[in-house]
Amino acid sequence: MKREIPLYTLEGVPNAAVTVHPFPTEDGLGLSLLRFLTAECDDVVMIVHGLTTSSDMFIMPEHENLVTWLHGRGFTDVFTLDFRMSNRFPYNLAPHRYSMDDCALYDHPAAVREVRRIAGNGKRLHVICHCLGAMSFVMSVFARQVEVTSVIANSVALTPRIPTWSRIKGTVFPFVLERVMSVPYVSPRWSDDPHLTIGKVLSKAVSLFHRECDVPACHMLSLMWGSGWPALYEHANLAEVTHRRGGDLYGGTSLNYHRHALKMVRAGNTAVRMYPDKPEHAALPMSYLDHAGEVTTPILFVTGTSNRVFTDSNVECIRRLQERVPGNPHELLLLDGYGHQDPFMGARVAKEVFPRFMPFLERLAG
Image 1 (cartoon, rainbow, N blue to C red):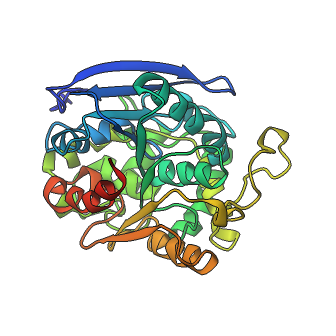
Image 2: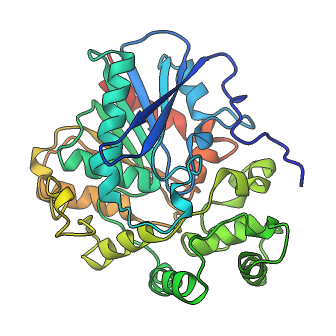
């Protein structure tokens, strides 16, 4: 099928100088940053995607995207990070045992150092992050691995809560996929396989249970994440072209990150280390709430009221942080009528969502 919008397009930010900045992690992966610069400024923004997405979710050409919107509000030096969860890299498509601990310890500190090297060490650095990118980045903050000026974290951070059906899927599906079907990853694009494969058969089977739309990638995404018809977003919030190109905007992934999230759910809905005895992770706390009283970075916890992936995780997170550290600098923002993914990928976000970030950003900017 011919694409309506080119894969990995930069057309959504036409008036910026765009540069690519590869960098390594200490555990030997190559990651990258895209810099979108319209003018030098003292308040630099780094944006972090979630699992199976990429920088592309913040530079979509079909609506006013986050990077362009920030440029128009005086934040003229914006970086988007593609870390090990990005569909721009092959790391998700092979069996692995990476966890969010690796992202917190290796990816985010390296990215912050690289942004500061490029933009200048004296700049204020604000981070906007989403999904497991938000969880792992906030983990990095609370593990005292990174220091930034502010964080806006969408959907989930340190207290993941998921629907009951998601918990059942998270327990059963990795075993079925890896051990029974011998498939190393799950992909929303399986319906586009050019010949009959196990993935294509599974995609067709999943579509039998999803009559809410006629986009197979959307059905697979509801299997991969959350519980609902659809699970990731409200259909009404998306431009139809965005809905149709879900197979490009979200990639395939193996399932160890799901295992880590499920372990946290079972640990009293608390971000904990995946492998407590792993010596490489000795610098990380066993529980990422252990040092909550030492964190002074203001965080705006954001969630949609129709979130069917991580439900009210961020509401619970700020409640527990306030309980542990009364008077902390964190805030909560609820987005009525929005789900997990559509706060960044919806057609009207430049009018309905992004302006609600500004009071927080303006207070912390120069």
